[in-house]
Length: 71
Image 1 (cartoon, rainbow, N blue to C red):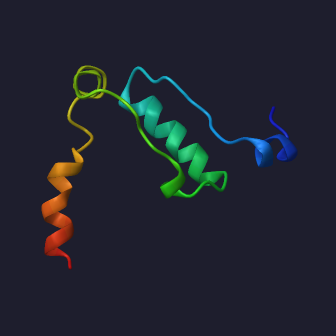
Image 2: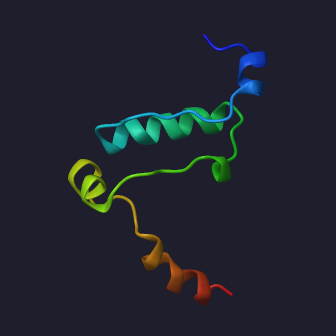
């Protein structure tokens, strides 16, 4: 178990997930523990995302048009 003092000194944590459900559960747990969504990022190659997670996650380029429409 990580103490509050250890958490305040922690700068980065890395996890490896083999499926979308486990990744989402980790994100949900982080957010319910006080992490802001902006502090959480996903780093993976496009091929790895497609193979492991399918098309559940959208590419940033797909969201660009949506962001402009909402402006």
